[in-house]
Every structure is written in C-alpha cells, then in structure tokens.
Image (cartoon, rainbow, N blue to C red; front, side, top):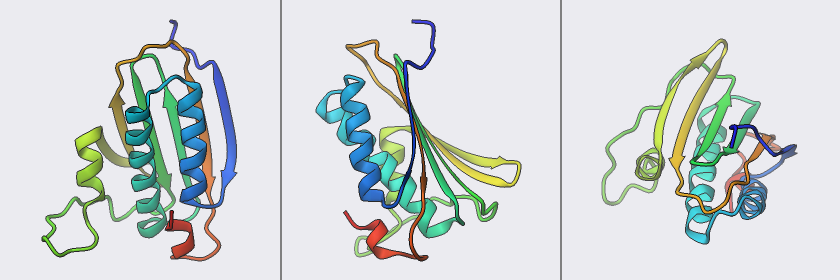
Length: 151
C-alpha cells in the first residue's frame, strides 16, 4: 500500500457520544476487530472529552486509520495549559484519562501555531488494507456541557 487514504469523511459532530458512533462505523468499514474498535473509541472519546473540558472551541478531532496504525489528533484553540498527566488517588473520580490512553497508544502533545494538540498513535496489527480518515468538529451547546460528555 502506498500510504494514501482510500476514504475520507468530514462532518460536524455535536456530542462525544455521536463521535463514538461515527468512529465505530468508520473503524468497522476499515476492518478493525471488536477489541480494536473498542480501544479506538475509548482513546477518541477520552481525548475529545479532555478537549471539551480543558480546551477552547472549536475542538477538532481527526482519526486516520492506515495499514499499521491509527492516528488520533485532537486540537483546540487554547494554547495553555498543555496536558499534565497527574497522579490520582483511589477515590478520585477524574484524572485517569491520559493514563488510560497512554496504556493503549503512544501519546504526545504540543503547540502548532495558535493551537494545542494531543496526538495518540495506536499500533494496529491489521488483517485488511483498507485505510480511512475522518475529521470532525465538536460543537457543544454550552461549556461545560454535561450532555455532550455523556454516553
């Protein structure tokens, strides 16, 4: 395969729940198995939720599925603060997202112009050659918008 993308979808998505459904559809079409789709949905929803909670509109998400990896990129318009993985206690209800994503993907973050980004690369052993790309903009109705973060 030459590394080109065979299919592309670009659309606005209003909620993280709708984004997960869109990712599931794209990942199924790309031939990812159920475990891979579940891991991808978790990575995308965790990073998108972090963007909505800690970032500034617009929050953009792109997912590229290639022959050997899935690359998730989430960026927003707030350049500071950069993500700060923290230690969390047993009873804490928040703060685990980046740690969980870090178990499933190689995670990095930084600045690109006036935007902050978080990038997660998930190595995927594949049984198919189909490549897909999706780019979406998350537009919650209010900030923070608990319904946008709900399943």
